[in-house]
Length: 456
Image 1 (tube, rainbow, N blue to C red):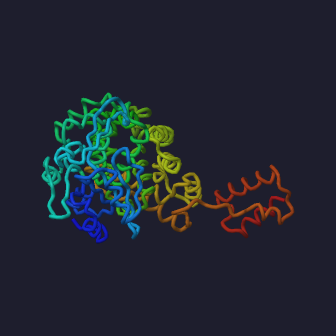
Image 2 (image 1 turned 180 degrees about the vertical axis):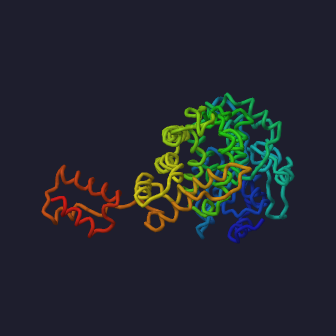
């Protein structure tokens, strides 16, 4: 593992760090070849207060994690690392605060590692010898892409099930059968979890999943899918086999999420946008369970789901609210869900202007990625981009509406310049002007002023 030079120097300079080990995600990620910037260290043989004093001579210490034995340290160079002393956690009551924490600086590293959730997170690294400490087979599980609980203490914190969901998705892991059964045994404890903690695991899933469907299958296999009814309802909802040979809506949704995760545009997007797009794809068919039925089409009975895109908006919003998603995500996801079939009718300049306006604050570029993932999520059908998506992209680019909604050309200052007094008619006239702009009555300011002159 390559450590920052400043951290290496600190480990050498502070005697209290003589038994400091790298732990957790940074060790796992280094073995996977994943770049990482966060380094967590567990320090043995020294009390919390002694460790804090020793570190304070070399930088700033923040004791906000004192109740969990954590010290947030900022070096003189501005780097930040977490140092902690080993502890034992004993479950005393329900909820994430129902633990009795006892610090044990002299505890054996193997015993301390046993309290971690999964074997891949129980790995430790000795910076002095360059050796990995692997007491529970975490390296083998990483190599075989297996997700396995570390010990029976797993059941003490039900959040570990949702952590398993996002780990399975991020690293494309297959859960061990015993781990699945253990998760099933605590399915009733979901109610102990604070909504903020539930949301954080979903946000990690949406941001960094390599195989998002692996996380969804984990919830299905462990019996935890029932806690997310909008997703659970997709399981078993049929689709027309001609258009969806892959199977039911749950299966289709998993394929769509996986397809999105493979798109270079998604991987290159900022963190909020990646979450928005993944949640939009997850939710795009949320209303199919309530709209799906058989009906005659083209002279034969077919499975149809008319209006599911529009009705899906409120269902998506309900799910996002339940997982504590911020408004900046909800306000972009909902219109993407409601317009994910916008590529099916032929695109015109008028329809593109109206679509861009209806999507805001989401964009046509984002919608095209959602629609692409939807179209690609139908194996064994080939991943060929739908011509409607191509046409929509071309027209939006030509109209400069790919990444933004149209802005009103006619402004209040133009009305004032024409001698029109502010008031309710003033506002209605601006609304009428923007409506005319969307319809194509004018495309520039000169056209807008001519339109205004024609109104007087």
